[in-house]
Image (cartoon, rainbow, N blue to C red):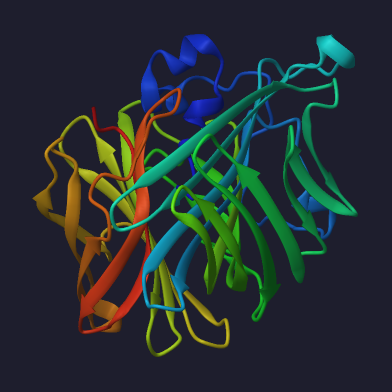
Amino acid sequence: MNVKVLIVALCLPVAAMAQGFAGLGTDAEGFTVPQPDPQFEFPADHGPHNDYRIEWWYLTANLEAADGTPYGLQWTLFRSALAPETGEGWTAPQLWMGHAAVTTPAQHYVAERLARGGIGQAGVTADPFEAWIDDWALQGDWDTLRMTASGADFAYDMALTAQGPLIFHGDRGYSVKSAAGQASYYYSQPFFAIEGALRLPEGDVAVTGNAWLDREWSSQPLADNQTGWDWFSLSFDDGAKMMGFRLQQTDGNNFTSATWITPDGQTTPYTDGALTATPLATNDADVPVRWRVELPAKGLDVTVAAINENAWMTTSVPYWEGPVTVTGTHGGIGYLEMTGYE
């Protein structure tokens, strides 16, 4: 969102980045802001929305090798506008940031790319769809995609095939993030089957699994008293899925939201207070790596645990992101993203 995805604090101008994730609550004067009752148009909305301040294309995947070893994979492209004006070449106000990662039970490999818009180094086109930064790319027609990225210690080349419909969070894609009404446009494709090869220091590993792609854009997605979030994308053994997030507030309270997704893609949105996420254990850096997640309306009461507790993204603004297991009333796997932790 992811709000997750909201990780685009990483793409804010330097002044806002200095504030960490709280920078997502800064004023959006001059930029377009999301409004209720959105009318999405595809394939156009798979592309960029330059009149909004921040946006991302955010994919995570749970993978497994032939020997049963679990892996996690991330590919993300963030867009941030320095100003609401338009321009060409070096005067274009768009900044781009890419994150890629592979998580194993023992290691977490991370890479980051930075680019300026308008000079061809990074960008997104809607039709045909392609998102790229340098030689990293996500391209295809959204029913089938190819994804590539590499870092100093890893590389991957993956093929994705959609096996279900797009999912719209909140009120038909209008996702409220605070009691004050800050919001984003937010939809996902959580039904990707994925396969390909990871290139790791120990050698190439063939993997298969499922992937979740988030699309989100806004200009002020957080309130000024919100400092970070905990975001869950969970895929259960019975084919159902859930997206849920908890936004941290300076008064010690949290704002929550969730979407329940049936195996055939029917959705039920849940507003603030329906979802509860409670930390159960932390790693050595005092970041929660085991959670109790409850959604009583669906009979959900599960423990979400990190496969690798040290999945720390050592990027411009650091955060935690990695694959998880799910046990309790529902078994499954998923991904967890946490920001606002030092």
